[in-house]
Amino acid sequence: MIIKGNEMNKVKVSAVSYANTYPFIYGLEKSDIIDQIELSLDCPSVCATKLFSDNVDIGLIPIALIPKLKYSEIISDYCIGSSGEVKSVILVSNTELLNINNIYLDHESRTSNELVKILAKQFWHINPAFIFPEKDVLDKIPSDSAALLIGDKSFNYENKFKHVIDLAKEWTNYTQLPFVFACWVANKHLPKIFKVDFSKALNIGIKNIDNIINTNYRDINKIPSPKKYFQENIDYLLDDRKKKAMDLFISYL
Image 1 (cartoon, rainbow, N blue to C red):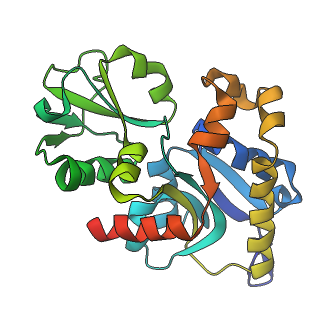
Image 2: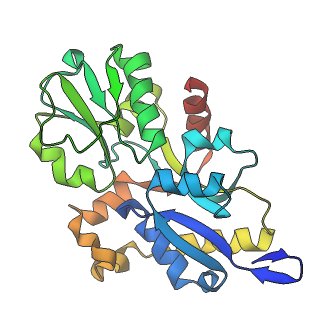
Image 3: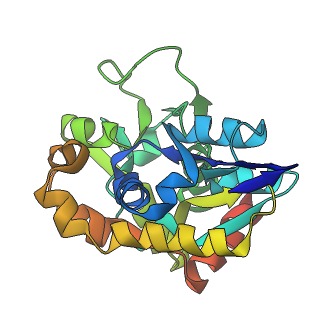
């Protein structure tokens, strides 16, 4: 709770609506902290917009935007990260990497857009045009182009292209570090006890992956190999190596 004057207000929280966040959502919903928060589910860019405009107090936001906040505090030891192949942030095309002239970006995630730009410049040594499509281009990508897919879209389209590049795996191959896509960030000071309880709630979800899958929580079985995805592709712990990776990524920005 946040005290404003003589009133106790619920802490407003914006969580990403993608499947990779389901364990976090499950943990929040199944813990006592649900009575202290007002939870909304949004795409990554909307999470960030809400946090920047002070419409929420906590957001699971793209790490590329953390330096732009007037006040920011990472309030949990959990994140959306990967220590190798993430499966849900991919570049798809029907042409070889060196022949790509255009890359269509995704409107919903700043970090993934910046990651593909960094990989192109620093590691792939290609210089494509980066384009925000006005509408869905996945069914008609030009032969010299590629598209960035994030979140649940990646599960539906990866088998429709000749070439699929996993961006987290590419980052790890070149830097020998994991990657962090999003963190739980507050735009104001919050009580220490709340932050402790918030992390404990997130941990409930991380510890209950099997139950989440067995109950088909939020239609989770739409994901190919959900147990592998949640326990191998997504790495939720924000440890020192991930913090080092975040610093490197932000330095490239």
